[in-house]
Amino acid sequence: MKRLDPAMLHAYLDGDPVARLAAQAKVTLPLTSQRWLDESAPKRLIYNALYADCLSPGGPASLLDVGGGLTLLTPLLASTRRYGLIDPLFHETAGSLSAIREASGGFEHFDSDWQAVDPGRWDLIVANDLFPNVDQRLGMFLDWALPRAREVRLSLTFHNTPRWYALQRPGLEERLTMLAFDGARTRAALEPFASRIEGWTPDLFNGNDGSVFPNGRQVVIVRLQGDLT
Image 1 (cartoon, one colour):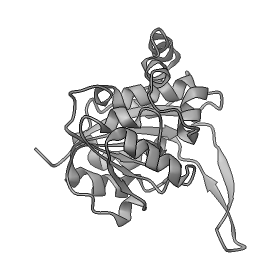
Image 2 (cartoon, rainbow, N blue to C red):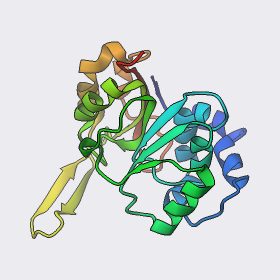
Image 3 (cartoon, rainbow, N blue to C red):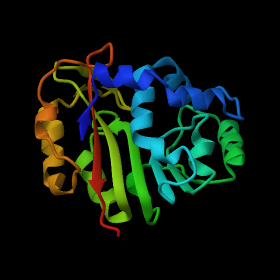
Image 4 (cartoon, rainbow, N blue to C red):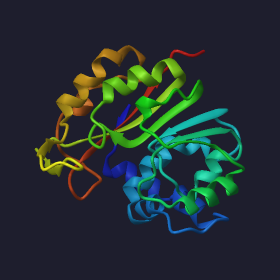
């Protein structure tokens, strides 16, 4: 477990391997998730923390990417292992998906919410920048993922300065105000799984200093032992 801080970002940028690998990619496409990586060094730091051992031969033999989007690095993740992506890909085109799958040698794509899928068993399941604010079902996700994996890796985002969003439900006039998770709520969702978490350090969810993002959000990288051996 680790919470990202400026020192980690500075050390990462000494080589910036995610940017370097993207620049060397054989496929060039206007991908939304790739643009987000290009524009944000902290997002590249997080990507590297979660996927570094999957960006070259070796590492896990199978990877299920939940909400991972499409990037120029997807072919690297998929070309040397069984790879699956659970993502409706609202931000990408069917043509982009086809081009990335062809460059990858093919992979399994589940155009669905993760809870509606039974994707089988995987060495590694990753959810990057999804919980607990894009999707607030963190505990439910771990109940779903841990029986299907040897390891689960997450980047968890929270705000210890209150932050909320005004939303409108699709097709309805009802408007909602969603309060982003703070550190206490995020820690509470993880506590039932603490025995599975590598280096469980609940104090990492306290405090509000040292963010690597302009909006002050905090990010903790978590690795959990799954049920599979």
